[in-house]
Amino acid sequence: MRRAGSIREFGCGRELRAGAGGWGAGGKKEAQSGLYWVFSGILLIFFSLSYSCKEKKYPHDLPTLSVILIFMNEAMSIILRAITSIINRTPSHLLKEIVLVDDYSSNEDLKGYLDEQIKNYNAKHPGLLKIVRHQKREGLTQARISGWEASTADVVAILDAHIEVNVGWAEPILSRIKEDRTVIISPVFDNVRFDDFELLEYAVSADGFDWALWCLYEPLPKEWYALKDETAPVRSPSIMGILAAHRVFLGEIGVLDGGMHIYGGENVELGLRVWQCGGQIEVLPCARVAHLERAHKPYLLDLSIAMRRNALRVAEVWMDDYKYMIYFAWNLPIENPGIDYGDVSSRKELRKKLNCKSFDWYIKNVYPNLIPLTTVVGYGTMKNTLNENICIDQGPVPGNTPIMYGCHAYSPQVLKTSYLTATRNLLLAFALDSFLSHASFVLQGSSVMNKKTKRCLEIVKDNPSSPYRLVMQNCTGQKWNVQHTVKDWGKRSALR
Image (cartoon, rainbow, N blue to C red):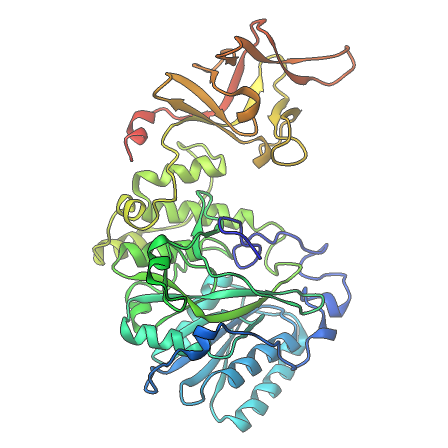
């Protein structure tokens, strides 16, 4: 069982492992998709539903549904499992079509052989399946937009192709959207292990994100518990990678941001836009979809490159003065991050046209758990002037006693220096928290002193040939510099 507040390891850009040469390159065929073929026959996974969900009744005259399946170099058997589960577990009078979107796959069996399989399905279910093929690789966001453009039903469910839907997954979605077309639905994700297809059922939670826009699970709101109805919709600040929406309403609010690259951040962008522009996001406990865990992501070895760019794009359009929190989280200089996030003029115009609310409104009314970094006055790597080739580092694992290590500026070396109004001193927020307690660090090029002990953070060598190590000792006048400083801190400190 995963805990609320933890990073979701799939669907949010956190899977950064891939084989040499790209997606499955050099590997055995059965592992090329990150899913083992031997377990992926059409025998579907057994799901269980809570008693309350089983007993829940829905109207018969629900809206029609288009299911969009996105893939790029997915295992053929995985795609067939997804299609079969959708057909078998969705009432036929509600399922209008399944739209497959191929983002320029290179696997040969996803070409002619897949077309044959589509013909076989359509022979049994006339006109049910259609396929859209990109002529170049356009990325996940554009693939989802292509699927939406090709769909014709009242409601669209935009899914990955490596999923299986649960029994009764569609009715709660369609019923809720029939009640309110401005609701965007996130199903409950379960997880299926790629090596043995074991189902791991996950508890219901709300969807959130951190300031780097990585996805998080959030605890269920107390208002939901007060309803004493485990089938009730859960108000959610954000949405994960798959969703369902009224097709026309999704178009009215701008579908997805086609300017996003590859993967990452598009779900947060949609969540902000929905809430700020008059809609709402809900997780439905009775709508469950199993996500087949993959060993690799197909697009990039390191998704953080695209994620960082996309995060800046989201910040520029939707976050107003809070956008600087994204720079802090990604350790980028505010004045010139050196990253081209593309033309956002059309998205800003969309926001103006829809008369959307401010990000400050969103923080205060939708996502108060997202705490602004308003006290940050410095952030990034921290170096001692004795040797500026080494930086303070968290060490091998989070929570480790900090060490000195060659500077690389990745997350184990990114810290934040915060101004504490009550004490008129600075706190180093990092693995250093427990090491330093409250520390005085007033200016660039100053000492770092523990207020209580009057000892300083310094670096020493045990002998001339040994590496530097961090110590707290009697102050000898050593000086420290932090990588980035916030010049107009006073403006941001008043944000909340």
